[in-house]
Image (cartoon, rainbow, N blue to C red; front, side, top):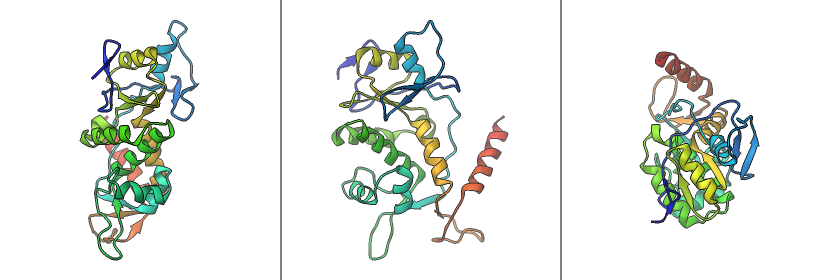
Length: 234
């Protein structure tokens, strides 16, 4: 396992990171591979500015574990085609954790976490990372708890994938030329969350309001729960 600078480790197994963000910090774009906006401290180096741009400090988003999403919804939210979704499930890259397609008429059911990983995979593919490297990163993400997952930033040079535990690690990668693209998983989480609020979902726990197997639009309800959680924590 080769090291990058004095801190970060190369990641086909991925390295780890707690990230910080602010309204005025530069934003890192996985699509463009650079800073697209932001206000910086004039005393910062380019590497420090770029490190700041991939940091994410929001509280860990809330995960609705009693809700699942069918294949068309999952592919829509992840920004991939249904054909890609089907292929990734059949090859074991990202499989639905709630229900697989077994038997005539059955439909896959994806969790929020599954869809988050799908979108991260799409971002990594867009940067040119190989499927072999992505498989290793996916295995790593599957092992992480929800709180950790929301705070991860993945860095890539288009060939390898890295994870960082601090801004210093990000700086090491950028200065060493390995940190060309940055993907803050917490930001992707928010994107997926916003998209799914407008798409149909299936409740796993049946009650009078949510019959099992019937799709509904949970956006308003989830927003209310997140607000209640935020207030109880404050």
